[in-house]
Image (tube, rainbow, N blue to C red; front, side, top):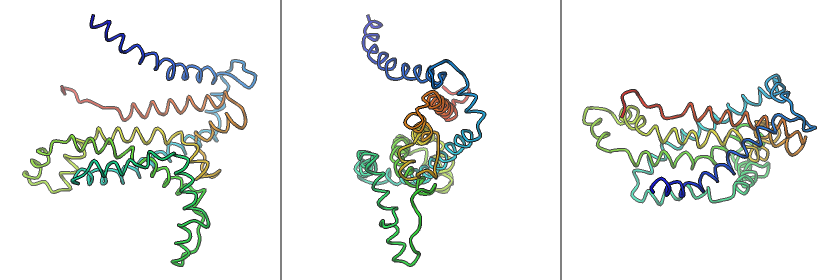
Length: 269
């Protein structure tokens, strides 16, 4: 009876996974083995791994995603730690995640207005005598905007991990003579690694495939796998190659999940 009830409750979940996760992946995989004419071929994969352009694009995507993740982590961990010490911490956390309610396209256009030649940032630089700079269409501007967009997704899991941390463990470390920095490095950070790991996954994986922010903020000077997929599907109409790049992205995401997985020590219960 219990087994039947559980199967009834989980059936919609399995159907959803089948229709919206597994089926699109199968269609993408099948499409990656087709050429312009729709004939079966494996040349797409050979062309991808044999082309220095695609290899450089892959390395560039991994590098940019790693930098964005590192910048986001450096900002988010101290901020999450500070939020947990506030009295009305849930309210302040709400203010942090509030920008996620705004459409991504609107936020991107807002940064275009800020970084444009006649934007607020350049007006301030001109006012203090530094002159107007080319801020848009650079790696720096793209990393800043991507980090801003991803910060809430890094803060939330770290914040939850810090909330769940038993304060008696930190107090015990301090009673044993640990400095605040030592307590943070040897007690707090290792015990909240699960939140850091979840934040890394939530930031690194989506950043790998960003294309809209890349186009609008980075222009043609910032090229990654996400923009390559967009180019092949919408411009060159080479859906087979676009699907191949999509499969490579999915493999990279899977490897990221594997590398950042929860490694339980032997003997742990």
